[in-house]
Length: 386
Image 1 (cartoon, rainbow, N blue to C red):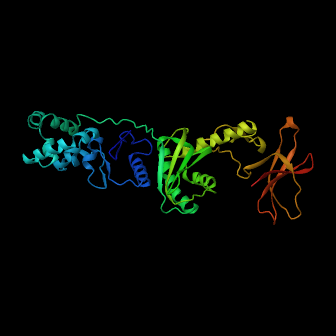
Image 2 (image 1 turned 120 degrees about the vertical axis):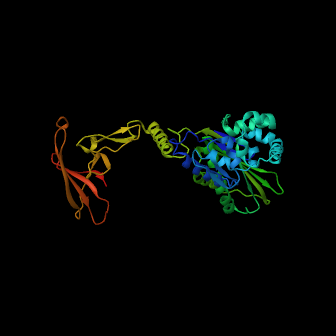
């Protein structure tokens, strides 16, 4: 769950020890994202989110699980105002600092000094604000982070001072599209339409709209599409600023969505691609090869709608993966080298015949072929290619 406030982002990963790769992987991913957006500031990992701002005194402060309270006791009293609900911290910071200034005048210099006071003493000396701080510090109150659903469109701006031609424009766009890809990924969306607004020095802004025939999110393919779209673009006066906006999106719904492991996402993309081909050419012509036990090559697989989770142990090592269906007539050249492979007898109800299989190589063709001699028809057939 996220709570962005005053350039602060809270991420609750307390229940992810065995989820999404664990806390360390999530933290590493978060740091990569902040690096992508060039976000300065400190990174803190603590046991409780209400203590996080108290430790934000250096660029990186990672505390092992269960060690935050001990570290908390070693902090100076000046960090106490930053304990609790971030909204309360922002609203009450001035008053909290005045209260801590009073604590220092009465001889309290560390958070531990305040932590050891009982409730009656805190109420008598520091009033309601002191009780609130004590509740946050001792864990009597816990922070529940709301889920943020941003509604503003995804928009990035590029300074146009160094853009004089298409090459420099594409160079600047590359970095911008990486940021936009990350933001789309965070919202689980795919772009359907982009808008480009060129702010020129002496002309009205130039607006260009790019509808995407295939929704995209990755920066590299987007850049290629944009390059083709803006190929003949020219502007008559110096470019001051370029704004890129994702003006239309659709939800991105992979199989088992994981923001860090792309395996399921890639699998779902493949399923969607095969689905489109099945709709065009028919269910009997497109699908995933599902291997099944059969000594006849043309019957050792069937078309399935799902990707096989594992590889069967009955794959024949001497047979090629690419099979011609049906087998094609073949005429071995004079320089062909025939290496015996296996002998098969077809099923009796289809008119039994004997096939003698060979692997064929030639000096001119380095790709081995898989052929057989049909004893009934007295003819060569090409059945596969390695």
